[in-house]
Length: 219
Image (cartoon, rainbow, N blue to C red; front, side, top):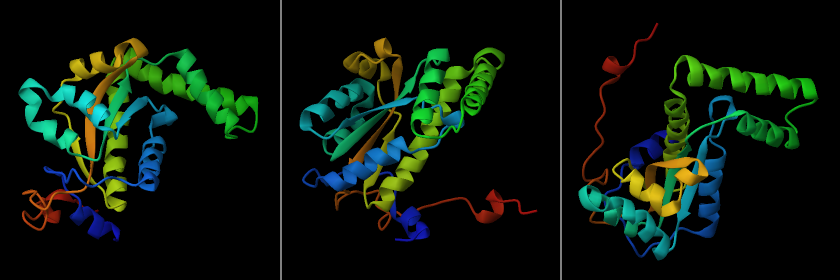
């Protein structure tokens, strides 16, 4: 599929075929999509819990009890689920951790360039931590950038996906001990293959978007 076809093909899947599994090679691509997403100053303020087993999906489904029960089958019937988690803080130790990994990967030709990179990270993070006081929100934005590229990327693999903010983040944080590790859950994305009975499939309910004349100003 070309890009236009991929965008028209993908949609938020409401019903999965529980008998279809994702190949090991495609799951490797899924994980690579998660790792290679861009983020501001390469901060990578995320962690991913990937569930393919029945037991793993049931653990993530604990975040769909009560009010969010409508999302439970989208997790339990999917082939895999990714729980996107975001850091709850970032400090000098983490900035140096990122810089040391970049140095190991050959991105800095000398120590001065590395130090300038650390300075840039501190500067931008500092604006959000001290001036705008929205460091947590800023890091969440980076995770949403990842989710956006992830949805397009998995569609290019022929995988259906369902992003869900309708989850009990406290229940999931408790289930996986996330807050003690410096993270909190944010969004769950189910992956797999659409069921033929899915009412939301594009061939049954065509996509609807605002007109180009309303969306674009060309200058």
